Image (tube, rainbow, N blue to C red):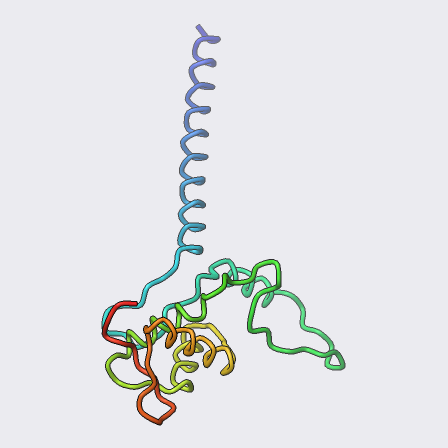
Length: 158
């Protein structure tokens, strides 16, 4: 009798352990999925969509926990993750196209695009923004407004 009760108790403990493991695994997978999924801007917002480099956010949090370097060393701000985790080609153009769509139909200057990107935690140089705008212009997704330095999203889908 005691052996049967002990076996039943062990089975119940094993079942609880499996359920807890499954719940923890599901929660962990959800966190990973949320961190890697591209976020879309809220309707009516003028901010840029965050980059698709979700794991970079976790890396930034771990870098903040590391001790800082001595003042004599060369410490520069990084705008991109390391070379082994680079963004795909054309990502800047896609992000900037989303910004132009969000701010349409008003014209947008590269400085405003950069500000929107920085508000969303992404830093891109002005030369990269200009290059992306030229790519969008070649695809008829964006157009320059007259002789100004402003750009706007074309109404037609590219």
